[in-house]
Image (cartoon, rainbow, N blue to C red):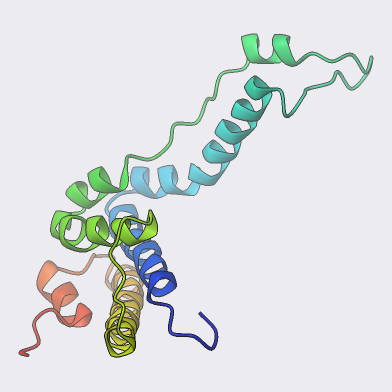
Length: 171
């Protein structure tokens, strides 16, 4: 991002924050959701470790004998933690499927390099401004979700989310 207007980086950051917003709104819906989200990092680490073992880029050794026991480990060890549902499913369960459909999916295009970048400098700057406004709104919505949960033990309703995201503003 630095000294150059880089709308792609801002779009990727927007998508990441939108994913975080959906995850927060899903996580505060129940103790089970919160626990699932809390253990997601460990589950992903175990999944990555298993993939590396299967590809041969990592190995398991017996601490006592020093013998390489990767095959035995893979036969015995199952990933015991389940990952949380997909972001799309989390959005549905948190009653914010519209955030997923309207924002997350379209920001995914930029994240995966399937967008059409503007050519004119003024269009690039305008897109950067839009992304920065989105980043600010999403960050405020994440904060609102967390504060509502901490203070009220309730999640924000869709209307208050729309308000903090700036979706109710008249153009």
